[in-house]
Length: 425
Image (cartoon, rainbow, N blue to C red; front, side, top):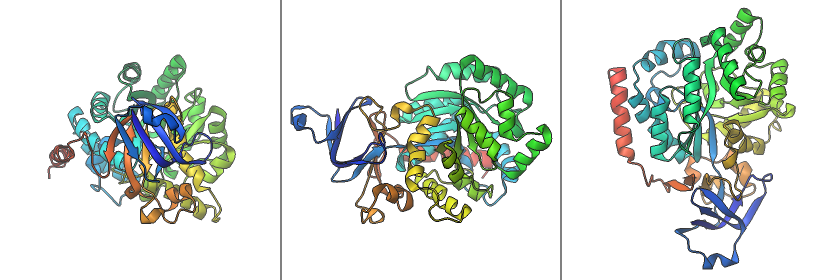
C-alpha cells in the first residue's frame, strides 16, 4: 500500500473543493482511503509513504483524442493546411509503417503523456496488437478506437478487435470507430452502425474538423456530418466526434439528444488553421465535453496544460467576452469529461474504490504562486513543469523527471531508427 499525506487533495468527486492536510491510500490498483489525516495510519504497514509537503494530489488528465504512434511525423511537415499535410506528407509515410514501428513509436508518446500528468489516451490508429503490447509493457492505460476507412481495416476486423481488446488486459479497452465521413463510404458506415446496434455501443470518429469537410458532406449528402451520422444510426448509443469545430445548432441538438461527446482539440485546430470549436455554446447547451491533443504530427506537443489554456482563452476571443468559459469547466473537461468519453469512469476522480490514476502538482513552482485559486492556476499558468509524479493503476511511472520502469534512451534510439528508415534520412 502507498500513502500520500500532508497535502491538498482535489478529488473532483464533488465540484472543485480541496481537502487541506489530506491523504490518500492506494492499495494495489485502487484507492483505499481519501480524507483528512487518519489517526490509525501509524498502525498500518505501507510499502511507501509520500509526504506531499503541501502540494496537490488530483486525478490525472485523460487525453480523449490522439494518434500516439504519429510521433514519426513530429515537425516533419509543419506549416501546411490539413488536406495537403495529410495526403501528401502523412499518408505516404504511414504506408511504410509496420506493427513493430507502431510499438516503438507509441512508447515515446506514452513517456510524453506521463511527463504532463496524462495517465490514459484514446488512441485511433492501426496495428492495435502492437499498440496494446506497448501500453501494457509501459504500464500506461490506453483506450483504442477503430480507424476504419476505405483504405485500411474493415467492419469485420473492427468487430474482431472490439471483442479481442475488451478482454485483453485491465489497461486496455476498445471502442467502435472509423476515421471520418470523407474517407469512409456510406456502406462501411452502415456496417459500423449495425455493429453499434449489435453491441449497444458508442461510435467515435473525426467530424466537422474543417469548413471544407463540412461543406463537402452537405454537397454529397445534403446533410452535415453530424446529421448524416444520426441518420445512419451511428449515434444511437452515444459516442464522440473528434474536433467538432464546424457544427451548427442543429448538430449540437443531435449531440445533446444522443449524449455525444464533443472532443475538443484546440492546439491541432489552431496549428492547421481549422477553426475554433464553439465550446462556450456547447457548455450552455449541456453538451458532453472532453479534450484531446490530437496526434504529435499535427499538434505537435502532447500537452494537456496547453490544450486547457487554448481551449479557455480562444473562447474569450471567439465570443469577444473575457468572462466566457470558466477555467474550472475546462479543467473538468480534461479530467472527468475525458474519462467519461473514454469509458473510464472508474478512474475519473479520487474516491474509495476508484482506480488510482493520480498526479502530484508542485505548488512550489513559481507559476503556481501565489496560491489564490489552485484550479484556475492549473489552467491559466500551470505547465508540465509542475507535474512531480504520475501514477497509473496504482504504479508510479513518472517521478521528479525520471521514469522508474522505462529505458527512455532505448525508446528514443529505436524510434529514431524507424523515422530514419521511413523518411530515408
